[in-house]
Length: 425
Image 1 (tube, rainbow, N blue to C red):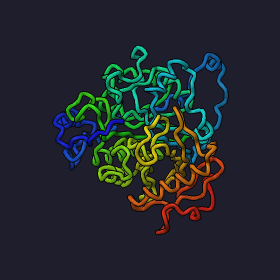
Image 2 (image 1 turned 135 degrees about the vertical axis):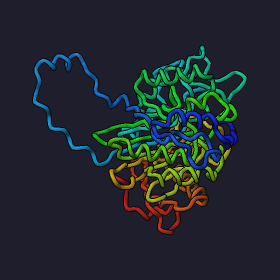
Image 3 (image 1 turned 120 degrees about the vertical axis):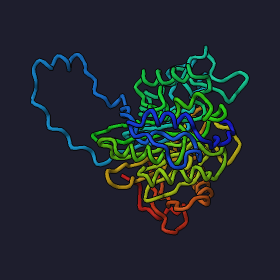
Image 4 (image 1 turned 120 degrees about the horizontal axis):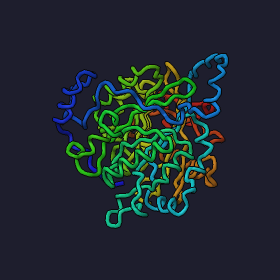
């Protein structure tokens, strides 16, 4: 939420020492150390799995062990799954107070149908989850905030599979609140990425498996509220953005056993700016060229353009998903979800699903009483921001569910609705 400056670009003596100590796992210094943030190890440790996908041994199941049954034929793994990615979610401040009053409050209820349309659901969690004695926003520093512990239960009830913790608010109330955040997410079975109890865990991918299809998610931040991440204790726990290091992490994730797709999340840029920064462009290009299937950005709190690179989508900024926005800047109430049909051995099929912030929640296009007005405003916004990117896709017609497919524009106007016959099925 703060108008942060990009992190300083300077050498990292700590990382060089860590690499020397960890040489046995293949950690290496990227060629451009000093041109960005602390790079991750080139070989990640064993990845965390989505807790909701892990089988649980119930008492009834344990009792059945006494009489072995004939093993069922294993189902053929799926050739594709659907991932729905949202931008910034803030469960602190006023929404945090609402959750303290009513822990059953569900800010995701209006988008339940969209969430149900995906196998994997991802958002950027723009706050810690910690008990601060009823405080969800600092009395003297309004840009410091936290969600209450009940926020973890909100995410779980909504079916959120995995959240990114690589963002500038992950140290707002310090290390103890950070570790409490990890504990609450683990308590409810929501996976997280981009942070961990060790530096290696922070840079490791979260691997989510659905019907035999495995997607690896990586998350990094280019923004830090407490000055330079190089010089901050948080560098041990939160993954920072650096071009060659991220490329190495993508390649390492691709080599994880059975991984079928890789998706990268990036928190960075300048708030309320239409244009993706050069750092974001370089980072996204490096990630896609290294083998990522999609790149999703957040933090600017407004929509930015979409680029297709090697047939893979780059969403420079999805905007806000669940976050009360200030009424300044270019259309901050408009945002989108990215719905990706991840396919084994092929580029994903991508759709965009506009949403509009309203009060403490969000309204999807399909349920928007102002649908025609919102759709027109969204199309105009995308036309404007598309002028700042190359390789922008065409946007197809919006279906009844409020989503529209993307397709290479082949030199046509970036928001031409006639380029695609219909929505992705």
